Each structure stands twice: as C-alpha cells, then as structure tokens.
Length: 249
Image (cartoon, helix red, strand yellow):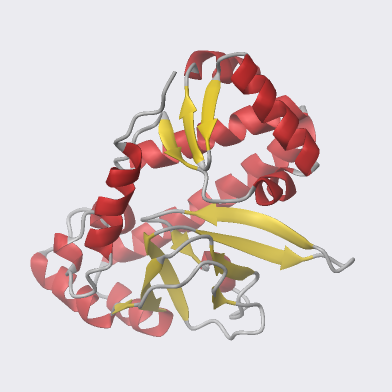
C-alpha cells in the first residue's frame, strides 16, 4: 500500500509555523500540549516574557551536555531530539526521544546539572524556560506548578515503562510497543497516528531498546512482509494497529 503524500507537508507546515520565533504562546499551535489550560491572558503574557525562543539547531547539534550546569528547561518547538548517557564502558545509551510539545531536562532539577546529552535528530528548535524565572512565576500561578509536577510524573511513568519494555518483552514485542508509543505521541500532537517520520536512526532505535541493529532491521522487514507496516526511507505507515497491539504481549 502506497504511503500518503500528506505526511511530509504536515511536518513542513508545522516546522514553518514554529520557526517563526516571534510567535506568542497563546498563538502557538502547541501551547495546549506544553502549558496548563486555564491560564489567564495576563499570566500567559508574563510567561511569554521569560521564554527564549531559539534559533534552529542543526542535525546532531547539542542542546546541552552533562557538563552544563542546569539553568533551563526546554520544550521542543519543531523537529526532534534524543538524549543519551555515557555508560561505564564508554558507550552511549539512548535514553529518550522528544517531539514537539515535549519537555527536555526535567531530570536535571534535583541535582542542578543535566543528566544526559541532548542532540537534535534533524533541523529543530526549542522554547527555553529559565528555571529560576519559572519558579518565581510559579509562586503566583498554581496551575503552572501543577503542570510541572504532572510533567515530572509522566517522566517517572515513562522510565518505569522503559524498564518493563527492556526487561520483560521479546525483541518483536519491544519494537511493536515502540512504534505504537510513537503513534500515540504523534496523535496527541495533531499528527497522523498511522503515518509519520522515524527521524531517529535504526542504530538509535536498537540502542534505546537494548537490541542489535541487525535485529531491528530483521523485525522491521518481517513486519513489512506481514503487512503490518510500510517503510519508505524514514517514513513509516502502520497498516494494522490491531495486530501490532496483539504483538505487544
């Protein structure tokens, strides 16, 4: 089955909108994903004043590293990022992928240093939220504090889910679960839940799931042969979500 041609334009349209760095929070198509609902316009205006909207990050360009002191949280405006930590053997472990509307750097709050290295997977941009200013605003905006706690809770839940994914599932179950997770995240952001871009490499996927690259490639080929997915370059189309869910175990 041929892939729909409307996937790339959808990504390009959003990227074009998000690269307009003068856009205000209340006019941003992503603000309902990254900001608490119910803020008054005056509150949004105050929040808008502390947000720094970055220039574009090129593919493989660092957003921050473990050597950087924690100063800000980041929200992806366009594109995508990955985070990595260096294991004791010197090899990098991919700990997460981040898409528009998602926070990066929440795990740095406690120790006041970034706990991972973050790099752009493609041409990307972020909103930078200086944490000191965010704390000051939070004193007068209870809903902002609640939102940050909610984000922290989601991060903890994601860590637990990853532990289960890596420890209890077969290779096929891991990959099916990963694809369905991306599907849900893209759907939450207004994209198609069945057709999207895999901006990360096969090597990154394998590293993240604790698999060999050859295993990931073999399973993806098997999924295609079973008419579960269609892959064209970095574009993927999920043909049978029901069967993928059944494969998750």
